[in-house]
Image 1 (cartoon, one colour):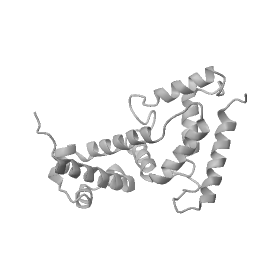
Image 2 (tube, one colour):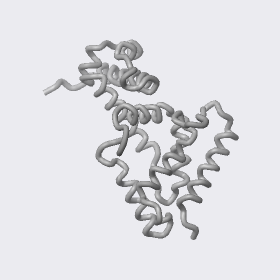
Image 3 (cartoon, rainbow, N blue to C red):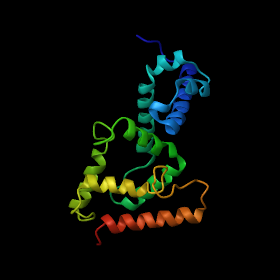
Length: 194
């Protein structure tokens, strides 16, 4: 049985995860370097491999931690799809590494199909289907497609944008304009008038 983690061990592990998140977000899986990660984390390769086993498994852990955080940070409410989209916009401003990590996952691991195994979006998709059955959301579009388009709309100004990437340095007026446009677009695209 492994020994219980020490407080110092937990702190080191967390520093490695934080350093790895920045390295992977900037350079992807293939471009990330263990030497840079351990130097930034004030650790060493032996500790990294002890905790994570390999650079690839470290990426998996970083990605998993960030996706879990996203799931708790941005609550999904099928009664407020525009609000959910705006919350995704806001979180991509505060945590741009989330979008970059997802882009690297898509480019280097899962170039097609579901980004994550196990269908973690099943609950959101079911909630959209229930909203469709209740007459609140357009039933002509598959619920999974609604979620995909809603997410893409919310990330229109993310680091993965083809046009313009939002920055936390943009003025409040610019962010408010984008939030309002996003909420209007989601409402008009998916919500059925009462």
